[in-house]
Image (cartoon, rainbow, N blue to C red; front, side):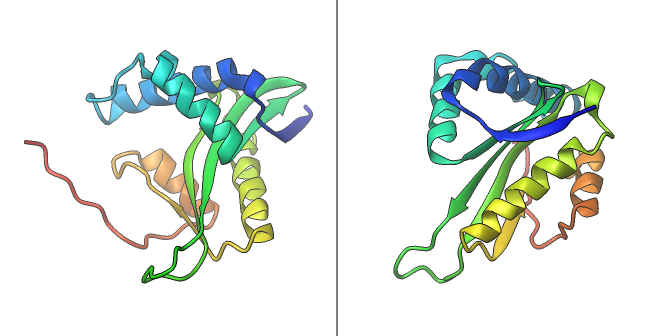
Length: 156
């Protein structure tokens, strides 16, 4: 099994949409019924994914040349007058195809993003995860993330 990570290109949009749809559907079914199961294939989503490919750090994991997962991340450079003066990054989305989980692909995607972040001077890498998604929380703990803040919400 040959696993590789590469930067996404605009021609990968259908792969990104497919994986984005699978991620949204998993979260919708298991944790947040307010998510729109069709959003990833909307014109708005396509435009956002294409913008991410062009402006952020988007990678595709491949196994033997076939797409197996993706990661979307962004680097945030502080602006003049910001209270926090370090360069940070947000890991926004990560998804590994169900058939490829437990193969190290998720870890490889995170490490590739971490390497990129270090190369551009990032000092802190952040990720937000639904608290009820224990599998994701455990994964992020195993790749070095630790709790830093708590976001609370209330359904009305």
